[in-house]
Image (tube, rainbow over the protein chains, first blue to last red):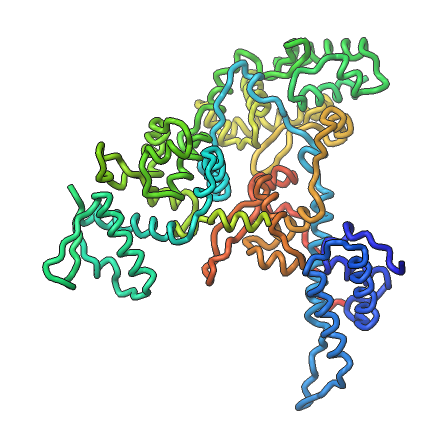
Length: 237
Length: 173
Length: 173
């Protein structure tokens, strides 16, 4: 086999490309696209023939390379004396940016890492001779912790249907909360007041559904003095 | 040998359970248990001699670093439940309410499988949730929802800012 | 005041995250922050002066007790099975987030040229990154940033402590 493949060592198509550039000792600002494309495709073929799971990203970059190569072959047209941009520019920019962060990752890894280079005390309660309940301050809790907590809660409940959180449900809850806020402040309102001058249909529908839900919950009462008339809402006692 | 003491000190500090002299000697390799034992005695007297806040104590067949017993009141203050803190059960209950509101207590308990009365009281006191109303069924159960303060704490503009589980699963795929 | 130092020493030992002088002063009650700060300096030089295996370091906006860096080989033997450290994809993703935060997933993927879903999830679980909010564009994509724990793990006082990013200047060559 012409190409020795260790796919694991590449972090992605950009990494493979950087490797080829380094291996060929090429100036990153002046990449011989034909050569690099050929080598890149060689690697891709080798990976395929080894039945390695080739991530789609590798193929996307392959087509980008082929595209650049074909553009390089076209005679450059200099219209109005304006210099045409180099078809490689975009890719070079991307490569340099990636390289910057690859080096940054290396520098991060060279820092003094907790649990690798230095360690903090691992023992917990027993050192105080009495147990303490661990609490998180609100600043320590982020949205991810909340989602994770919800996942744990429903996982222990052991049913699947609860796993879906759909956007509609959240939007409805949001609308319900807003209406409860308004009713707590003013005791009464009307449907058109709740809609305001915002006329998007989704908002109107959610507002209506929220009112129905709140009526069902007996949080508010709705009145209408005539068919199709204004819907008046008041907080239930 | 000064460095032997430093290594043992670091090991005692980093260990998650009491260490025996034999285990320490094993880690050190070319060091015999007797030398470890005498170093341990040295360290012990160093710590008590300089009135350190940390004590080296014999416990459960091994040796462990602990805070000095008479300093417990301060440590308790450090570890005291924070005024604005949330325990794991409280966080889970809050999460269920956030994602399933408006929701009845019985429904929260069905999902969490435990009584949540105390937790709900705590969350109400911290103004993270509120009573939205009462459901029109026998017993008129109270219905809960989140508060505006909840949004502030989690830095959300509105509830639609909450990530959906599907979004979090996509991160996994 | 010898006892002040002992108390602070015990607090540093017992805390599970870096402590600020302000927090220590708060726990001590009748003690001002200045006194705490000078006691902390004393403790620091005590520890380094007696070549302790434990070091007192400034990190993530506070102060923390850690094992001395040069003793890592011994501690690693103690903790053998748990191989610590971060994978290359995790490090690269973390680097992009650290230097470019707040940042969307799509932006991270553009820079790294690969899907980062699984990596993000892992970093969230390790509390190295957090969801900062959502961007106000169609689809409301989630934006990410680093956490305080990130500073702790990488031994940084704050984000300005990050190694400088060597941006290659295109004009240069």
